[in-house]
Length: 201
Image (cartoon, rainbow, N blue to C red; front, side, top):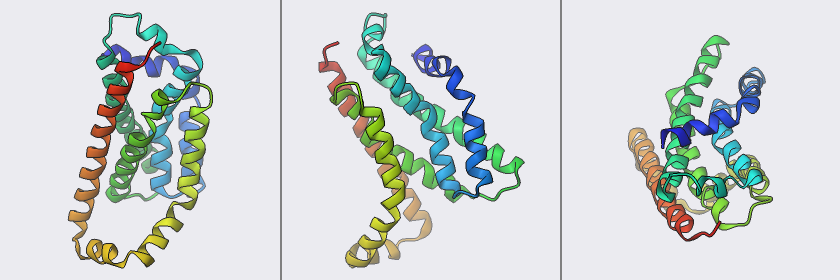
């Protein structure tokens, strides 16, 4: 399974040349640290999906001595590994450029990444290849663009929920968000596993 995870980086050698300049661009332009960390986190996992979609890699993978359970596990575990490495590299870049960021930014990024991945990963196995990656990226950009407005609207109209959240301590709020994101990710893993087991290649 380790070789399946390592495969994503090997196949993306050319795209990875853009990784550091992309991070530096977001940092230099004073983008919010959460956005910078999030873009860095999705770079490798979603590029891997884009490559697999174009090359129909799943046909090849299913001819190799790997079970379908291992293939899906490598995708979900690999995404977490590459997210952690991306956060580490981005943190070093922030330090090197003397730009401020907080542990809160990293925690928010991890939760957002897990939620986003939990929602989008199954889509790559539900729909036919072709335009899924494009739709996912557009969806991500739309979410980043209108997400704050949606949250503001919900805050103003769902006062009971807002009051409950406001009554929670900051640690409890972050722990709750992290647990919810992790549960969503695990559920998505299970759903994707079932879909992939039944899929014909």
